[in-house]
Amino acid sequence: MPHHATVLITAPPAALLRGLRQRRPDLAVAPLDAGLPEAVPPGLTWCFVDWLLPDRSGLEMVRTLREARATRDSHITMVLESAEPDDKRRALRAGADDYLVGPLNAERLLERLASYEAKPASASAARGRLTHGGLVLDPAAHQVRYQGRLLTLRPNELRLLAHFLEHPDQVFSRGALIERIGKDDEVSDERTVDVWVGRLRRALVAQGAPDPLRTVRSAGYVLDSLPETN
Image 1 (cartoon, rainbow, N blue to C red):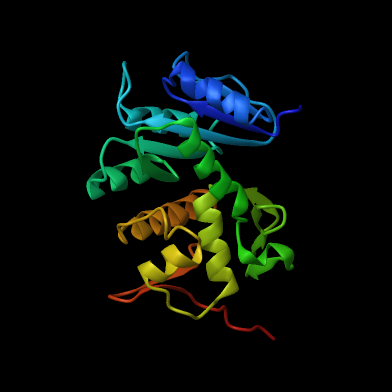
Image 2 (cartoon, one colour; image 1 turned 30 degrees about the vertical axis):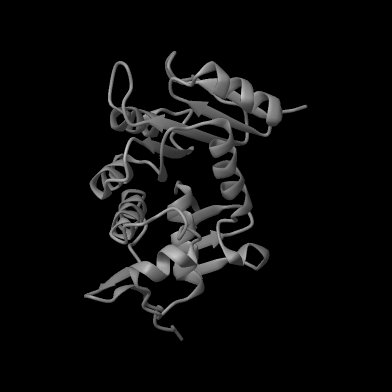
């Protein structure tokens, strides 16, 4: 069976690898403890990184994955040792897309994969493109362009931007954003949204696009419509 997604796991027990390969033979499953891959097969790549590793911290590994060509656009989940809010924020700031509290086994990993695979980038995936000035988001292709140039956004950033583009001039609280982008079963600290928004803003500006979001003190965030031009 051809592989359509790759799963990379730090220091995985043999039983975990065996269970994944038996239950999901369509996945290309590989350990990350032997170093970063120079390339991965085409398709989605999911990385699961332990909080503590034998030779480095999991936070350092996440940052390394984000910098490596083969894995910088992958979806990274950090496997925490506890549910401490500060650990969750540190994981996201390092570059993880989300987190779960360990220990990790085949059943829990596959449940998390199923939740990822079931969620499109936006509920607008069946509709046309979303635009805001020179910014264009194509939900079906999971792509964002600014003035025709392709931008690189990670999954959470893409979902967040799509949501704001679909609902301009509406202020959304942190709790509402967690619910609207389908993370209410994964995120317990609403301040996580500040990390998502900060990363989205930095990613856009770093690639030459404007920051379209406005912070509304004590209320949340909003994307203001652009004035119409004659």
